[in-house]
Length: 112
Length: 157
Image (cartoon, rainbow over all chains, first blue to last red; front, side, top):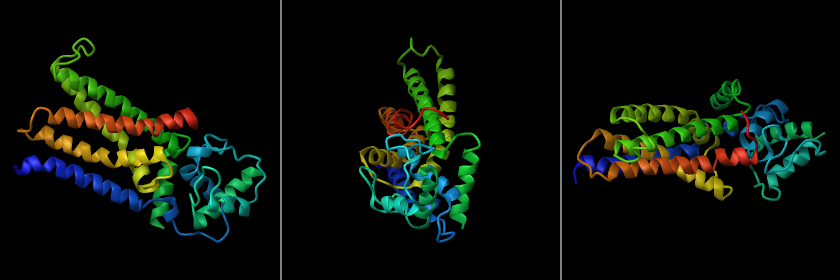
């Protein structure tokens, strides 16, 4: 086989593996941002929510596959606990650390 | 610091047009999928098929094929950036697992196809197989993302 014949499958595998590696790294994940503070920030939390949670709960948390989060009456620590442990089909740890605190602050605000 | 700035800046830019980055992805992917249909139709015409469905001359079909391909690739770039560099590799359920696996292949198949186009000497079946594979991967990505979003979350910008 000539080099030209081998090149397309080699390039296909190389680019696919590079994409996979970049996806595993995902360098610009909002969760890669350093923690701003110990307490949750609802404004930042909304942004993180839209990226990580809106696929199920809807962009405005009005519900989709997952339930609406408006007026559900949960506090931030309760939301943080649910995020950490998961509930129903929602996996545990969708967001972690400061991101989880920020999302909890946002959800608690709209949950009241 | 930098990573937070990049994701925030991207989100700010996208949200000047769309309600969210997810909505932007769904619509850009829909555009790319639509152009993939154009790609399949014009490629079929160039290979002597679908004369009645695609009443274009060979040079016109070739020109439309090239420009629709370029535009489709452009539309996928923000989607790639958001999916790969911000959301990353996640496998919480079957739909997302199929999506991330198919997504890993899309630019690999595209790169291989572009090489085969530019270099001669390959068997005649290689290019249609690669083109068809690329269209199939794009269709899979659209079905497991944009269609799901439109039918399960919301149909809007």
